[in-house]
Length: 94
Length: 375
Image (tube, each protein chain N blue to C red):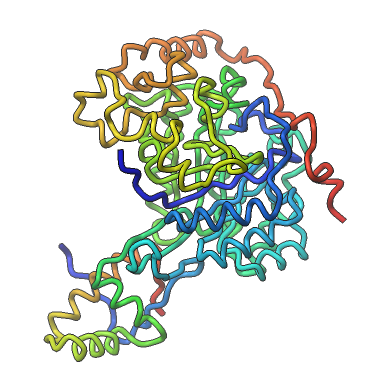
């Protein structure tokens, strides 16, 4: 898969009309948007719950500390996930 | 059979509508038992949420015809549902937009009949186009995400580029270009609405090009004209798998068109049964659930869990038996019934019959006519 280039200073936010909430049936996070539901995997859930104005770099740092992993490896994962969500118009990068 | 959990509820809160579009998929005849009350809908919404539903679409008819719509939206938000209003926009004045936004409405899908005002009003059978443009502006100003929906048929399909331009100029986030599907009034008007093969080929090229050009800006959903396809649509992602519809009088339907298309199926009502029981246990939801009901060629088909045998309503309308393979499928022994319709269209040339406009249910329940109800 092609690695996406997303600036570390970019601030990801949920796009307009997109809601992040807990699915009462499973306890997992889902994204709700017009005519759609996306059940999130753990990585996406971890990232999206931190899209609160923080930059990509800050999100990676927070996750690296929490899970005690190398932030370089994590950056690629986070950027891939964000690029995928951006393609689906579920997040915006500012 | 173990029932999966449903994801979305289509709440058809009224069949009344100020428009008369000949492509409407509503039933041509409806019972007049009286619409569900606000309290009844609120209970249905809570029961749906408990069943696993995450999304609700308020539809109809024209859902703005119900004065209690903001209360229903609020009830849905309190039940953590994502709320979508599917509307003609007629009756959406400033007060109502604000009331709906304050109730927590998440998004609006606004229908248009064309980009051209005269043609649009002719199709709608009402002076509606300008009011829709006004409604779009109000929705935008209120900051509510906007999707546009165009039902595509022979009379407007050649204006696809202009319709896409309208969506761009209204700054819609999403556009559905939905080739007409033949149920309800549309089935009655099929000979007039069905586009020609040449029109369909051109429309597909235009939609594909627009999709690429507007990627990342506007989501374009192109709904295929299935009579011209060789394999059926994966209707509802399978019967009783993800979706349920509650109609204005409380009947619970696996599909909104099932009540009129499949007369031999008996549907349960929320006034007498719990939604959970209807979803899991009822005959109507279990009849075509899974793959066991399938006849050949579906039963041994590698596509059977991809297209689920197509549409039960279409099978019923075109072959007289809802348990048949969707006759759109090239493997169906009944494909000739679809080809005959296409052949007849092309031999008719431009001499299409006039269409019959959709009319409203004869007895209006709960409230007066939709327009008169506005202050």
